[in-house]
Image (cartoon, rainbow, N blue to C red; front, side, top):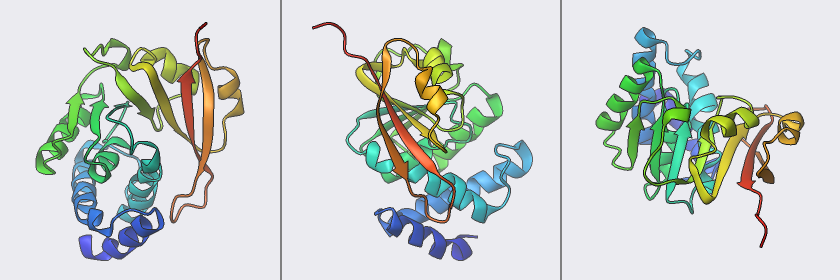
Length: 212
């Protein structure tokens, strides 16, 4: 599988401005995902080439927005998306994968062990029940829920200057309008995912400044 997919992945990485050397660990992760998916049904996408675009490259399209961060919590990460690809591409970033499903958490622990991802930890917990000692620079969620629901479940996790980096398709105007009190849209970045014609956006949601 590695040899057939490597050219596509290297080309995608190049288009995203990332090092082609990342292809090897990313393909190791993909191979693990394909193997476990046959038994555990971790993702509805079965075709490795489709996974490469819709999982790996789609996750990595948001990498420029996590580069300056120290800590990131990926909420409802499923099989580790976008957290594992981002951790592979950003070794300085400490990534916490939060997943309540036992099968998926088992896969995540195995992936972290096999890929030797020293900057990743797995937390098997419901999002609203996860109360770490220190809060995060940012939280992210890829296919979890609406923006208001993500913040209802995980709004306690970013620090005072922390933010939600939400991956969305078409700009979700209704969700932005319905943001809970205390949160506002700081920026909406259109993303271009190599090989994916669909519209994608990364939304930065921040706390509204309190009175001076």
